[in-house]
Structure formats: C-alpha cells, structure tokens
Amino acid sequence: MKLLFVCTGNICRSPTAEGVCQKKLVEMGLIKHIEIDSAGTHAFNEGAAPDARSQEVAEKHGIELNHLRARVVTVDDFERFDHIICMDKNNMDYLRRSAPAHAQHKLSLLLDHVEGAVSQDVPDPYYGGERGFELVFAEISLGVDALLKKLCTQ
Image (cartoon, helix red, strand yellow):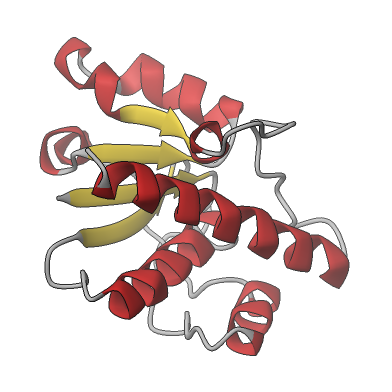
C-alpha cells in the first residue's frame, strides 16, 4: 500500500504527517508493508527541508524530519499512490481538478478519517506561532491514527 500526504508547500503539514505515519508504522511493525511520501500542490519550496518549527515540534515527539525535501505533486502520483490524503479542502479541491477521473476515489481529507472531527481542515501553521505547530501536530497524529486504524481493518 502506498500513501501520499499533501499540503500546499510540503514544508509544514504534509512532511509532519509523513513523519508521524512513519513512526507509527514502525511501532506497529508495518513499515515494510506501507510506503509513505509527502508532496505539495505548489512548488513554492521545492527542494527545501521542512520548516524549522515543524522539525522542532516533531523532534519533541521523537520524529526526525530533516532528511525530507519538499516536492510538488506530479501526474504520476495519481497512478503510483493508493491513497492521497490532503490536509485541507483547498488542496483537496486543487487535486480534484488535477486528478484523472479514475483516481478521484484515492483522494481524502486527513481529518475525514477521524470519527466526530469538528473541522475537516488541518490548519496551515506557517504564519502562526509555535503553539499553532503544536496544535497541528496533535491533529495530524489523531488523523494518522484514525487513517491507519481504518486501513488496517479493510
């Protein structure tokens, strides 16, 4: 199975989701069975490491993100990945317009996997303070837990 996490610039939310998912898969003993990656809908930061604030928060939770590099979603991603998980509705809408008809079913919002989630968007913490990055990390962790639980019971 192959999972792709997507946000706007691939330096805050989606690399955090990739890191969180990787750690959880290692803990579950499933890392060899599920491939994960992250990408952005826009090439603003292509080749850049994740935002230092995202890295700092992830490190507090035992997750290293410094090896990741931002990239943009490609047409090939719609074929390569089984699930393309968006961080917010704007990115989902962008990908819906880009995805071929046969790949539309692969798209979902991360927080749609969380039963009873109040918001469907993981907010972009880029222009906020450190507290925003902590809150985003918590939401992503919750979403990844729910996603993996759902995928493991299918």
